[in-house]
Amino acid sequence: MQVENTEFRPKIVAFCCNWCSYAGADLAGSSRLAYPADVKIIRVPCSCRVNPMFILRAFQRGADGVILCGCHPGDCHYTTGNYYARRRMTLLFSMLDYLGVEKGRTRVEWVSAAEGVKFSTTMNEFVAKIHELGKNVRLEDLRCKN
Amino acid sequence: MQELITRAKELLADGTVSRVLGWKKGDLGWDPEPAYFDKAEELENFIYNPFCGANLSKYLIAAGKLEGTTLVFLKPCDTYSFNQLVKEHRVKKDKTYIIGVGCHGTLDPEKIRNTGVKGIADAVLEGDRVRLNTLYGDKEAAAAEVLLDRCLVCKGKTHVVCDELIGAEPGEEAGPGELAVNRFAQVEELENLPPEERFAFWQEQLSRCIRCNACRNVCPACSCLKCVFDSSQFDSNQKANADTFEEQMFHIIRAFHVAGRCTDCGECSRVCPESIPLHLLNRKFIKDIDTFYGEYQAGADTESKGPLTDFTFEDVEPGIIAERGGGR
Image (cartoon, rainbow over the protein chains, first blue to last red):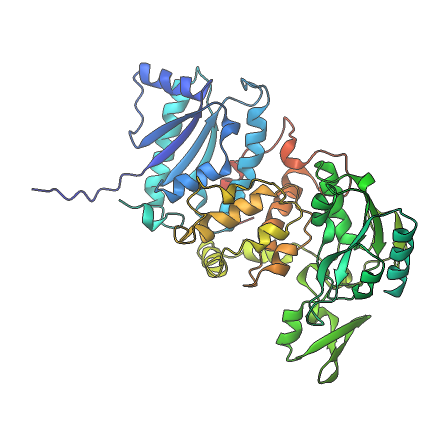
């Protein structure tokens, strides 16, 4: 017998930079700090590796929220990467807002390797926000539905 | 116009330039097309009238690879695009000879047709009136109604780069630009709508897109030889695969790729066969850059760093978008 599951489980994509945020997520895990399993982490070399297209593509393929985590400004492993990412993301988020996509679906957070607690609270907050916003319908592609 | 032809012939004859890049008469009076002229005789077909909206600076990328110098005619706003290409090392200044031509605004044939005038053969701009020479006799229209959108927010009559000026005075006042006070007025209007209405507006506009790629091909800032939209790895290169892609990604990415480099020349909207106001996407980026990172006009010089290839330690955090109200 098949059980119909109607509970909304958001799909969240978290781009985490290899040097800070990914290690931060690791720390959250090893410190046994809970964060929802809805968050799928994608490791990137640096926050500035994230092309605006990655974010659009994630939404198109059914993500309900996308969060980008990187080193704190000034702490980038490549010295300046996150400064560029910061400008790009500001412009991209503003454009998505302009096109009528809900603002809460995108977020940037700086998480260092020592901030396991911050990682876990950020993710909890973000997932709660997406629960509030509900399913992403404006940027999804019907063909990518399973 | 005769003055331009005479000067071009002189420069061809004395060997300063090897070819001329300008506009030639099209099949129809309102449709001149960009063209190369290699010989003095060919210049008989040269034309310069208010329908010569095409920005010739992008052609100089290809022309720069040819032997010898190219003479090009640039309108004031085209020179910004040229400067931007120089900054990006896409064209070389010393392989081009620029004649800055005077401009009193360029006309939108579509808008003229919408006023009910048919069979347009020629047009002359006189102050805020346009005298139209048509197959059915002379007509008149108000300039504000038939000028291209970009000319309503004219950047001014100053050529930021040129070797000589013909038909233009240095420091001439902006003409039609006086018609519009604020070039961000339309953007602000959209920003003030509720998100649902903004979404509906852009869905309506962008769903008309037929992915002809004209906006990409004409854009002087969009000059990559290998374009992300042409990649075979990318499922949008087949029309059958690209379904809601136009509405959701293509135009965002296209505008984003020229963010900080777009001179707001308005070519994208001019060539769009579906009349999608694409410049409103580019202009949104310009407005945001101005607000967050200080006023910046791409192409105003060849030295400064573009806003997206630069940063300051005190830049605003992306969170500001979610914090502020409305769509500003």
